[in-house]
Structure formats: structure tokens, C-alpha cells
Length: 62
Image (cartoon, rainbow, N blue to C red; front, side):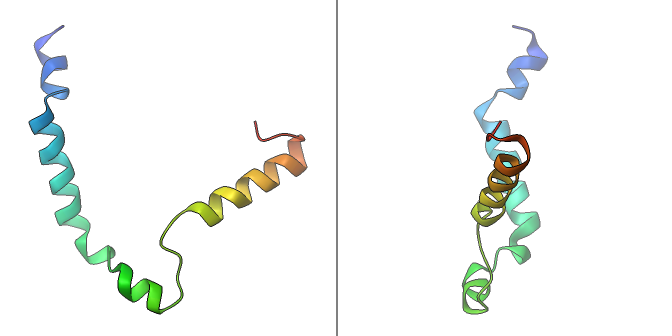
């Protein structure tokens, strides 16, 4: 394995990237307020709609 590949797979690098993402987007993660407002906090509604459309158009989920 090349050194560059091992750097990408380093758990510390992945953790640092995840923490950076969370810190950058914390203002968008006000889930209690979203729930109080009746807004969805997951993508399951969209995913199920896509499956339904695919089933109607293609005749299957694939």
C-alpha cells in the first residue's frame, strides 16, 4: 500500500474530517427546533418517494 493510501485510511484523519464537518455544520443541525416545527429530520420520505416513482416508471426499484 502506498503512503498516500495509508494516510487516507488513517482513523485519525477520518475522525478529524468528521469533527471538522460537524463543527462547520452545527448551525444546520438544530433537530429539536426542526421537530417542533414539524419538519422532517431524515431523508426517508424522499427515499421512499424515489422508490415509488422508480417502481411506477421502471416497474421495479432498480
